[in-house]
Length: 254
Image (cartoon, rainbow, N blue to C red; front, side, top):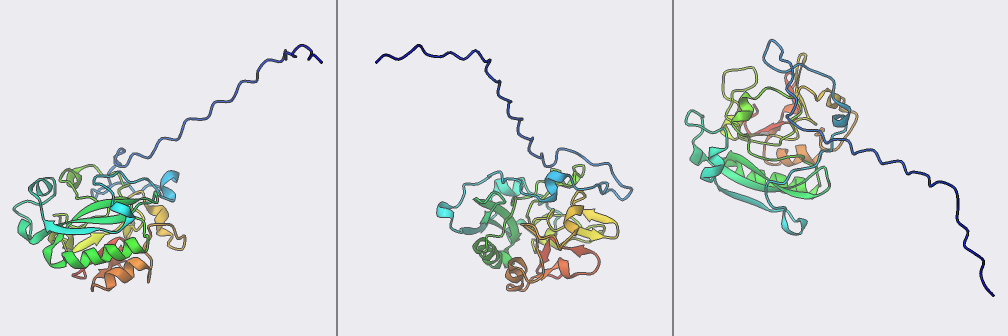
């Protein structure tokens, strides 16, 4: 039995619709804000891409082996000190600081390694805090040493760096912040904004003032973050009346 001739369709092929290009990733720090008279940026609505923030982490250090927590405590290497905000006029000597590397979970569901400068007197307890946060899989977007240029850069209102030592005065004051001694840590600032009157910091983080809308990276009363810091005797700025500093933990109560 022989087969007949193959049938050839005369219909023109239907062109496939090209997939839309992926939306560009949000570029943190790329868009300076107009300034207020007090020098902070204008408080603007949260961009939709940041309203439920889950930006990926850019790795600065190798991730932890086997997704297991690792924390190290060392004197501050000269190259790290040089790219930090430390200078001779800071209220703490360089020898009184320690350089930590700490494992953390990103919003991308991957384990990463971050870095932090803290006062030597609190270095080991801080490692235990982040060990507990890693075990709880509390997500952190970024953890790196603050650079000097960040202190004078125009505000962009979208930062979310978890950090400790920053040689600067307290916000709106002339006295040194607890950060300038390495005795305070800000955790996911964008997800846990600072407020005082009409000021919101970071300036684009107003969507996170709704604390009833629980999203990853937020700190709430009694959660694993508050419990971990409370266990080493640190206080949480989220319990303050004014300002309310939801990102801030310190050993000094300030």
